[in-house]
Length: 71
Image (cartoon, rainbow, N blue to C red):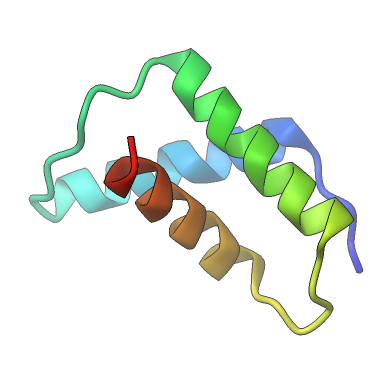
């Protein structure tokens, strides 16, 4: 499994949020600390619990959705 870095995940999260906002979706306030916390959660899940069959993009999207839903 490929090891990933937090900076990469932060960039992917920001890109995903921007894409969704351009599509008309509204997001709650997402300060940098919250984005970094989501990235750390994804990083841990991917590197420690990682499923070799998983799609990183899906893991990122699911973690973002869970964070918004349960915040």
